[in-house]
Length: 204
Figure 1: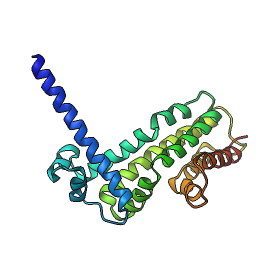
Figure 2: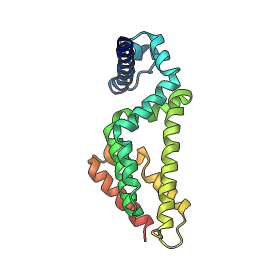
Figure 3: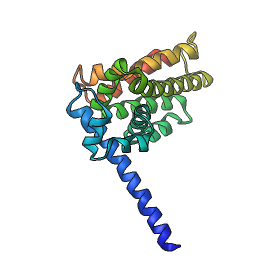
């Protein structure tokens, strides 16, 4: 029985290592050759696995990019961002949430830039994964806007829906990248500007 459990643990560890190697290969290919179409064959070669292994682990090409999206969130500090945005004081939650989004973008800027561009050309796989990430961001911004409204922190006459639209705009990857890459701002400076803009636009 002990031997069987040990073998099961080894198989599970091997499967996790294979999954990690494939995901890392996606990152590597996106960074090194962003203009080259990203096929499953190319990913498999980079990960040193057989093509069917990619489908065995992720189910489909769309499943692979869904996993990449989830991995980007996890490695970029999604849990920390959620914790900070849930601060009892909604104004502090606003600051922590926007800053956390910027930190996630900065952690994997090059990969996110390529994925954003690929999503326009590959709606079935990459576009679906990016779209689901954006749906999550929209829900998060709507929740944050609602908390600001509940605590009477919004400017007079400003609705939670309008606040959600503003937060959606300010936390978009393109908004971040226009400052971070386009203007050469640091992640901290980018976060400071976006946080200040959000507060001055939304809060009383």
